[in-house]
Structure formats: structure tokens, C-alpha cells
Image (cartoon, rainbow, N blue to C red):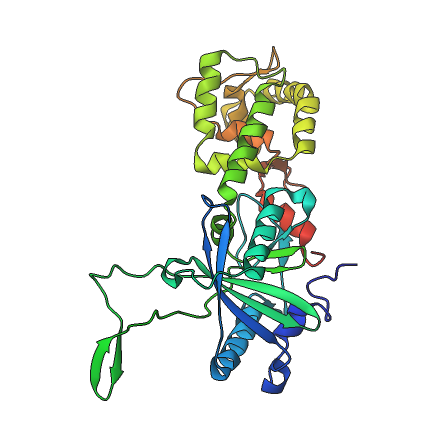
Length: 356
């Protein structure tokens, strides 16, 4: 059974609790620089570096500090990780995104295997200046963890040079200067991947391709549904507008069950929208308040032919309101009974928090 990340026996929680130097001696470290080169037969290449005892001790302390920085402090002074399931659209501050890497996960699992393969078969000839990120491999308590740190690109040679001072004299550094540490961008432990920075993870795994494929697949599925009976010109325009970065992620995030629910319940939602519109109060003052209560729903009237129970996409439109509808973002407050939009990252976070 997989331990919760906040279980006292979980390797990350154990590492975060280390403080004394003698405790950190139990950590075994290996350090690599890695390059992504998807055009090659090897997706990643890694170069190992041996570390001096002094540098190893510093890196252990730094690693523990950065693991602790991934936690949040509670009112009683205790610390814990806050985790939500990986979401394509957003990541709440101070929350780790979790992605399970198994054979069913497809592309992420393939990238994970390629990364581990590069570490297991390192390339001593890899040019350190052309690497993308650092990898710290830590063995502790019988478990192996991999921590990934972004490497900042160097300034152009004409703008800045590195020099070494000896006996009061500066000379050009003949060897490559390598930075160590920084903020943990993401980490792997077995089949668990915890992400602190979505962009860094998506760049390292080339996840953008996966997002685009999911967007195109879901968009095709939606446009093949019976209610999407608009002419070819409007369909083409809808597809182009949905290619915007923000809309891409909204579409890619939609799952199979969500798409099935959309098709099954579309006509019923159209019926409800007809009733809401027909109940519009006659007085201007009450009508304004009524519209405010149903504000997110009211935007849909421009995009739905409620009599034919089909979608329409007028010229000059943007797909935002329709996508909120398709992605099931429109919710009603239990307290005020007003309708609003929910951020899917919140619901995903609540489902995954603590139990991840």
C-alpha cells in the first residue's frame, strides 16, 4: 500500500524532519546534469559528477531545506505537504501537484522511463554547458528519490565572463562553473511524481505535445456530438479560437466521463435554461437582480439555440462561455443560491489533499 506523503514513514516526510549532520549521513547522493534532445534516439542524456565531501554535506543540507520549503506550516508549528492531483490548467500556490506514473499514464510514464534510462546509462562526454537541469539522486531508508532543479541559461559570452582570482590576479575560468541546488521543480519517488513548478515539469517532459493532443481529441469529440450542428465556417472559426493557450488547457483537462455527461445531459440543461429565461421578472429592477443571480448562465443564451437544442457560434464571439459550460465550471452556491464559476484546480485539490 502506498503511504500518504504526510505519513511519518514516507521518505519525503522523513527527509524533511532531518536536522543533525549525523542523521544526514544516512543519505546517499549522486549528482547529474541532464539534457533533453528529443530529435535523437535517446530522449535524454545525463552526465554524472563526483562531489567532494564538503560539497556533498552542503548539498544534503540544502536538499533537506528545499524539501521543507515544499511544506506549509500549520498554526501549531507542525509542517505538512499540501497535495492536489495534477491539473493541466492551474496550480495553487504552496500546493504540490501529484501525477501517478504507471503504464496506463502513457506519455508521462514513457518520459519517466527515458529519464531513468539516461541516469542508468550516463554519458561522460555530454557538454555540461548544453544541459537543461540538475538531477540529485538520493537514497534514503531503502528508497530512491530523484529531485530535479532547473539550470539557468548562461549570459551571452560577449556580455559577461567568469573569472577566478588567485594571489590578487584575475584570470578567465578555464573549466565550466556548475551551479548546484536551487528550488526543487519536481521530484520522483517510484510511481509518484510531485510537481512544484508546472512549467518546468511540462518543459522537461515535453508535455505540451500531450496537452495539444488531448485538446484536439476532446474538441473533435465535442464537435461530433448531435447538438454541435453548426455550419463548416463557424466550426472552423470555433476550432481556431479554441487553439488559444488558455482555452487549450481547459479543453485538454476534460475527461471521458465529463464528455459523456455533456452529451447525455445537454438537452435537459437546455430545457432548464428555457425555464430560467421564461421566468424573467417584468420590472426592470427585479430583472437586473435576476440576471445577476444567473450571470454565468445568461452568457450562454448567445451560444445556444434553445428551441432546436443545438449550439451556435456567432461571428465575433469567443468560446469562453461555451467552454465553461462544456467543462462543467458553472456551479450554484448552496449559501446564496447564485450561480458562479469554479476553478477546477480547487475541486481537484480537495479530492487529492492529504490522501495523495
